[in-house]
Image (cartoon, rainbow, N blue to C red; front, side, top):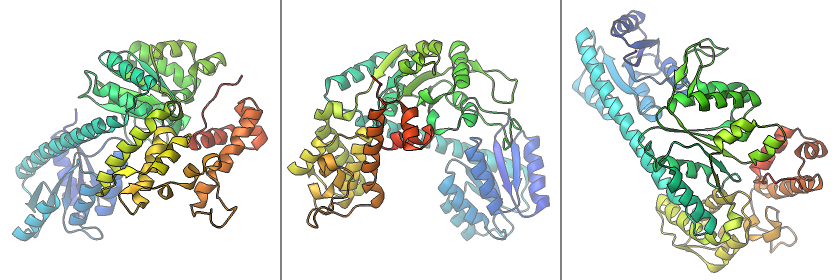
Length: 468
């Protein structure tokens, strides 16, 4: 077992090689970089591969990017990585400056082996504490985000009751609802109210990952498993071990991926791509779909045995237009939070603005309402949101999304990209209705491929209705 991953940065090949050899003898995974820019590349790649460096040992005086500049970049983009600086020209002033910028230690060359060992051990302890604090802050932020899951509508009260009932168990939960209704918030609420609340909450939107990469994202891969696999990479299942894994858009999983998921659910074990090693995990699985899975089962597009395995408890999250009585409460809650974040005192919506919000259908659901409130809070000049602060497509009723150019008095400026969304949405809706929501035929009529149609429907908040 490695003691940790350390990156040694020095333009002197002999120095970096000798330090790397020392650390490898001590059990570290020691990597090297010849200058600051190469170090930044290595750090970013390690983060993207979910194998971040625990510490960096860097010379201060290097051509191009100095060790001090590298330190600033690390503190900005890799706050959980410890930094120890080395220099051949140590002064009290430079040491104080380095510590002020966030270095864990500042050592003079030539560095003594035992001194470096002690310094690195101390730096790793400090970095572990910082990562723990960062994790705690993220969990607190997650709890704050749950305040958005509010509503007095009967269906939302039922959602709250189901969360409280299912949270203490290990039961698989399937959530359904349109995009933007709050499925991720429900998943986080279940995790935060469960015995696993202090363990990881890991989420993955399956629809955003190309099919060829989804298996690697879920199960990880071994070095050399495919082109570009330059290091072992743990997957989401391993990252969520002991905690909760939330898989959104599970309806987009391919038949082959569905088979692999079924095995993990049954046996709680898997093999990373390109590896013969079997890994056992303890993961509570939450899943979400923005399409009715029973329809996909009936069409042979989703495995029936997997459907019954994941649909132990079903939570249906209503669209915002189906609980319109919650719009004022949600809008006011968003306004209070956003106003505080902006450092302003915006206290209310006037009657006309609130009436416009209540009339609007919100195809993008709660997420769209939050975005509209944020936009209005940024643009308003006073302490009250007026109707003029709202987007034209919200105020315009049935003409939402259109540029109102019938008269010069009615026209109000708005981004062209925003103005063109509603005509596109209406064209797609009419084509879907004409084809009884057959998306293959609709895509043919619109002369686009099915994938493009799906992406457009998701972007425009068009629900996946059943044909009939």
